[in-house]
Amino acid sequence: MVNHGWSYYYQQVTNQLDSIHDFFLVIEMKHYFAPCRYRKAQLALQKGEEDLAREALKRRKTYAVS
Image (cartoon, rainbow, N blue to C red; front, side):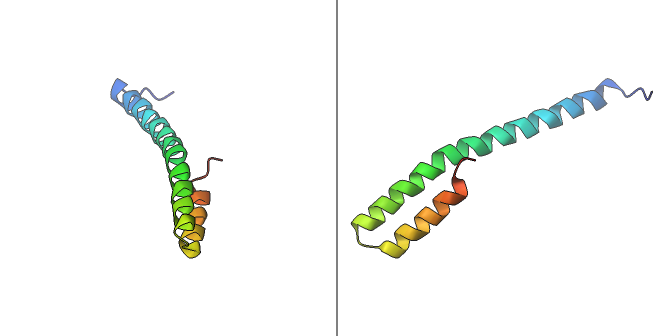
């Protein structure tokens, strides 16, 4: 068995925590941006800009929480 120093294990744990943080940041962004895109689509429809509304809904699908 290879005996790594404590700094090796510290780095491993730090990397894993960074990955977990990034994962939750992505989830948080999806929850924020999907409703924003829906509101933009609604506003575009109210102004009669159907193409803009379609584009907002396409982008909303990109942020949809899966």
